[in-house]
Image (cartoon, one colour):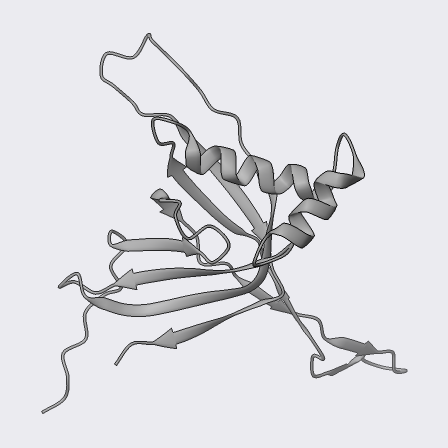
Length: 165
């Protein structure tokens, strides 16, 4: 008799960023990026001829997380982006490049758990770096406490699935 197949759980997942091992991201939403292939079109007299793709294009990785009380997770991404773009001086870029174990880029792992909350599937994003960090809304007019969230978007070289056995 075959194995019973369950649906992929959209509720149980966690994120780790190799260059930020001590930072906890209280992930609320994560997207598994799509991929596209660029095919080649060869003009022909009657109909175009299409040839197989020669490269993949990966969509961006977006993560929405709750900001911790000291804003440590938000500030770490903020500082990483400042170091990459060296907005005030070149030493910010050099410091990020030289002083960090990881350098400018970092691998990111999204762990998705199964319905029994056990590790099920890992997505590894290679050589990632943040390209945007959203605004943070502070709002006292809400009837219930809504903890501030932020969304960070990453570019990366590629990603792969790693199955847990």
